[in-house]
Image (cartoon, rainbow, N blue to C red; front, top):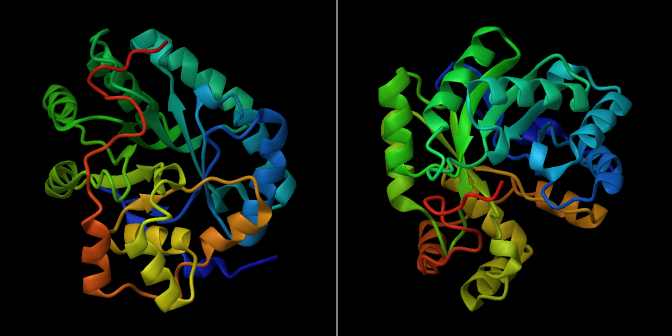
Length: 280
């Protein structure tokens, strides 16, 4: 199936570059299945792929993009630095290894995966990322799972504001305070686990809205993200689901429907607390 890619809006980052608002995530996609899943996403119309060193599937992402025949510049590729590679020299080496696995000479966006405050190296690591951006090997740089205090510290230390902060964000954890800070600083909010690992799909309010629009509950939640101006990266290895998640640009939620989804906020996380997480 091929879908018109122009349906996906682009959002401008604070460095003047643009990112597709809808991307394809490969978290927990087995390495041996990654090339096939990404190939289907690209044929569906996705033009943004989100991977990470920790996912161990960067090579499959690179393979699928090369196999697609698409020009490299037409696919926005994000990868991330893992916790064990914090520190200036370690970060530079880890980035080089990610490029090798992908088989590219640059990535579009490079993120610090977690701040790991217990190691207290994320400022030094952020300085390394600014060097990677300066030499052109990462066109844009950002962070993932950073709280306001982490963001304030790296901005104060370097004067460089991340282009993106990718965080756990879904109707049960809408991150309103963090999104406000992002808006003030010109940081784009990117949502991982946008469907709360399917935990919100059976909510009566979501099902009612889905029925009203003739859509699936997943499409309704992804549309909620789009209207909040989040960048969103749903993942699936199921071809039909990959296609379904892409078809969210030909309907719109009303203000009342957006508010009904907002009311699902419980503050519950699926993933770990960024202030505590330190797994290497």
